[in-house]
Amino acid sequence: SLKGLKLAWVGDGNNVCHSLRLACSKLGVNMAVACPEGFEPSEKVLQVALKEAESSGAKIEIVREPEEAASQADVIYTDVFVSMGFEEERERRLKAFLPKYQVTPKLFQHAKPNCVFMHCLPAHRGEEVVDEVIDGPQSIVWEQAENRLHLQRGLLAALLQGEP
Image 1 (cartoon, rainbow, N blue to C red):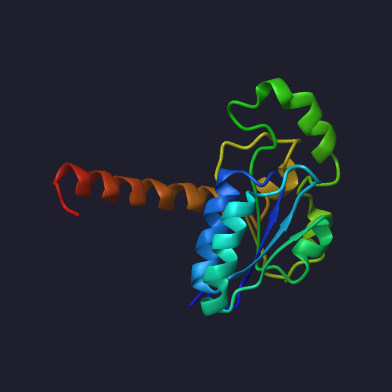
Image 2: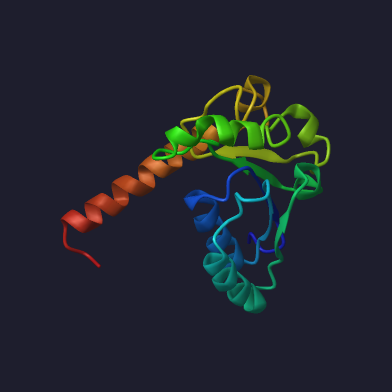
């Protein structure tokens, strides 16, 4: 069971953050989102997640300090700071996120000893994550990508066969 685990999201409150927030709230996974002011996840998504969390027991929160989000985390997860469609905001976004919200080995000092690193890929190395983390022993990004591939293949096969 995933119930009671803690996922720390560090970075932009984007679509991936929204999906994780909804999933965590349904599964009883605690989620702390660390992001700069103005880059929070959608308030509408937050309200849905908080309602789901009432029945699952999950704690869903937004904090400003990455170290607070990472405290006793089982997973530290991030995504690019400049998503597709936001390229014209690149300088402003990088200024808001760097260096404070970059995932580094130092951030893992606040997490549980067996904490893993996740990223939906592709990563912008040196921006949201440093090489030491994404290539380090705590990184499960390649396993994550492989699992996503098999899931997507299964969904595609089901859709092509006309199964619900």
